[in-house]
Each structure stands twice: as C-alpha cells, then as structure tokens.
Amino acid sequence: MFATPSAEQQRRRALRSARPGPLKDYLQTPFPDPATPVGDLRLLAVDLETTGLHPKKDRLLSIGFVPVDGLTIDLSGARRFVVQSGVEVGQSAAIHGLTDDTVAAGTPIEEALPEVLEALRGRVLLAHYTDIEERFLSTACERVYGSRMPVARIDTLELHRRLIVGWGEAPVRLGLRLWTARERYGLPTYRAHECLIDAIACAELYLAQVAEMRSQGDEVTLARLIS
Image (cartoon, rainbow, N blue to C red):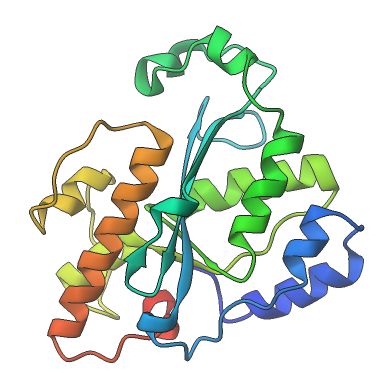
C-alpha cells in the first residue's frame, strides 16, 4: 500500500527512459528525503472520482488536490478538474454526482495531467487509501506518456490503522471511509465524493493524525509516516 524504500530508485530508473514532457519534468525532482521532519515535509493531498475501482477498465472523472506545506494547508494552491473520460459515467453518477454532460464538457486528461504532475513535483502524494490515486494517475500517465508514474506516498487510512492498533501490529479490518477516521478527532462532516472537498478533508485528517503522534512524544519524519 505504501511507497517502498525503493521509491527514489524507481524515480531514477523511470527518469532514464522517460520521453521529454510533463512526466519527465516531474521525474527530474527527487522525492523528499525519508529523514525529513514532518514540519518541513511538502505533500499534495489528492482525491479522485472515477467510474469504478479498476484503472485498466475504468476512467478518471475528476481530480482535486491541495498542497500541504509542513503543518499548513495551502488553499491558494487548491485545484479541481472535471476530466473528459470518453465514456458514460453510468451508475457511478449516484455516488459522485457528475453527469455525462458535465464530464463531456470537462478538461482533457492530456491538459489536466501536466498540472497534476507539476503540483506533485518534489512532494509526497497524500490520500486516504492511496492505492486508488496512485494506480489511476499512474495508469493515466502510461496512456498519455507511455510510462507509469513512480511516487512517494502517505496513506491516512494506514495511519488511522496504526494509531489504533500500533506500529508493527497485525492488520485489522477498518472502515475505509474518510469520514469515519475524521470522527476520531471531532472533525466536521463535509459533503462526500466531491474531489476537492475530499482532498482538503484528507489534509485536515493528516494534520490531526500528526498532532496525535507528536503528542505521544514521537519523532515524526517521512520515514515514520511511510514505513
């Protein structure tokens, strides 16, 4: 689920074969050092809405992101794209509220991806259950640029599990919902399944989780958050 210690090696390897363009530009910048203190860490909270859970057959419908600089959410850098998917949204519209007309009038993925990659450059991907964001964005890069997207990532769902059962303990079943994890800290309930709102909600949850870890006397670094 997490970026492995070889994430930086994966970036370097991908850089050697990447074609000139937005993906190569993204790959030019190293990922943050694992020893980076949380107060100096640069992240990008990302949330996607999709037609399903399988990136090989389903499509991106919207992308929302907001930068997190240290312990501050930078709302000035927040962006949201509705993405032209080239397919009907089907029953997924009942979840995210995006209609076929809205999606058809959206931004082509070839125009949205460069902005996402530039925003993510030199940052750690932050999401609630990062597999979805990483797999869909990486698959989109493969379709557009011919190569997948290595990424360093922090998962607020995994942090939620660790804070409940402890680091290094056996996994337990937890609800996947972002809002369930937020209830632990008394964070407000927003409208779910709107990509930018969910990205901001994930960033807020992350800061609450970090505050809990620091209150326990933990030294919080990137390595602590991803390992």
